Length: 398
Image 1 (cartoon, rainbow, N blue to C red):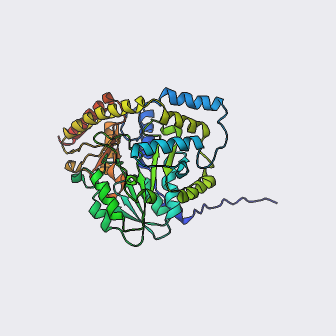
Image 2 (image 1 turned 90 degrees about the horizontal axis):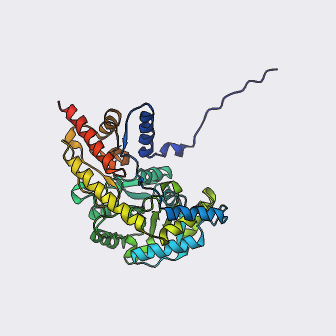
Image 3 (image 1 turned 135 degrees about the vertical axis):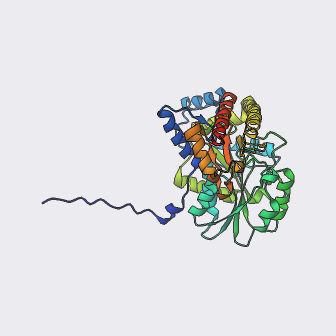
């Protein structure tokens, strides 16, 4: 008797159809494939510092492994790291942070994911920036929430239009997502606008997820956090981490600061998903926060130099118009003058000019007419990329 094996059809849960992606990784994969075929590609697409992690941080991790920090730890993070985070975050923002308000996660994305999972029911409204980091919209849709985008006008230096944002608040608004310094535009919320937003939110019940992952990469002025204003710390989940500030993207370590009743539920989500963050990485995090900060100041100074080269170069290319970003390591030039759509231009620059960047629409529909370039690359490579773009544009106009 023969047994006939039947192949089963994959039937995914409906919610998987609502889950988005992050185009930077898709473009990176395509760019690597082009390089493998022999084509030169300059990478201005991926959002990570191109600097090495500082030696004292690496040594702290190595020593931690030798000392036995290779086992499970508490879901919310090692107490000594939570203490270091509380001290550092509180000092830099002028607020009091209790270690019990800190949850350490493998990367900062879980704080976005867990916050939205914990707070947003099907049909609840969530305000988020558009253009903005694509995982915001993806996770809102995934849990069945209703995303309500708000704009970041170019003529306001990509700062938040607080008046417009406040008009979008309704009785169904459960969460407001902020990101300053901002990805993809490099915009930074001014202190006056943060204060105005704090006043405007006072009469509403919505919680706030404040993504401040780039807070130490500001080139003019000081970082201002919503948590610094009366009554707002208790309503804010503050997202931060080590990836951008300390060039530790591959270490996968972020954290959230939130009131303790929220922290308990976020830690429970950690228990159910990741168990804990790698213990030796957390020991490296302590060294990062409490050790020599020269690596941070030098990286920021180099990004400032690269920013100037990138902006000046883009503004010299016909059809491009680029404002000076005030934070992070991105520029978001307006390319409507080229007469070419964002996605088509980004594809052409990669496939024909050998410059990898991202379409503005990778960050939401309102990113049409823009491209995002990361200047986390050497000045030499940035200049080479600008020359390639200029040559490609000139060829289209002949």
